[in-house]
Amino acid sequence: MKTIFDLIEELLTDGDQDVKDAAATCFLENLINLASANKLFSPDFVPFLGTNSRAYCEAWDSFTGVKTEGL
Image 1 (tube, rainbow, N blue to C red):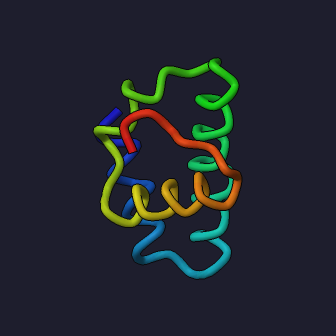
Image 2: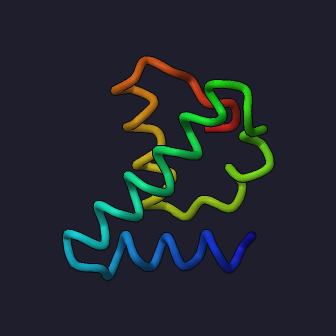
Image 3: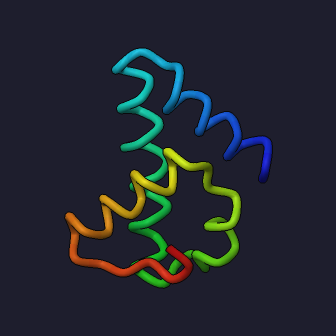
């Protein structure tokens, strides 16, 4: 899992805007949404979030009014 989350962090940091949007929307938002629907245990993935990924997930929580465990 570390490899996947490291790649997402790299894409959020170094990708063009389309790549950043895809990493955030298609990957991170879906993880948070699944966790908030109790279909994924967030403590299993939150420790792997990089700095930018964590910041995005925290912002998504704020936007949606959800509090993801571990963030």
